[in-house]
Structures are given as C-alpha cells and as structure tokens.
Image (tube, rainbow, N blue to C red):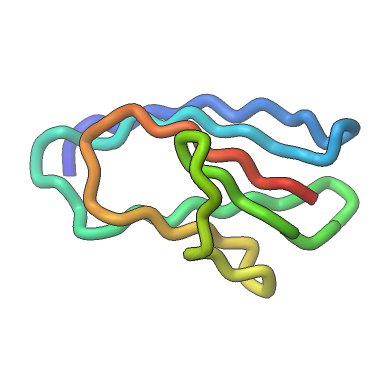
Length: 79
C-alpha cells in the first residue's frame, strides 16, 4: 500500500484516545481499520473523525473503520 504513519495520544484519564493518521497515498486501500484498546478495558462510547461523529466502529472488536482516504485524519475514541 505504501508508507503510512500515525501518532497515538493516550488521554485515557480524560476518557479518550486520539490518533492522527497519515494513510498511504499510493495503492490506496478501500478501507483502513484501526484498533483502540483502553488500558482499563473500557468500551468505546463515541468516535469522532475529523470533528464529525462517526458510527462505523465495533465496540466488541474495539475497531474503527475508515473508508478510502489519502488525507491526514484525526480519530478520537471516547470512553
């Protein structure tokens, strides 16, 4: 898929974990799955992607699914 990088900030004391994702720009995947695991095993209650409430996530799998993108994306999981 090409190079991809990300930065994760644990703000678990504030009830959230934040990721900044720079997806691949060559051979763009149809979807990107990211997994957020809270250190105290709390379930995800809400997700924001680029400041928009996001519904494509699984509480059971702790997985957030993004569609096809090449833009820098900010993902926030709230607990």
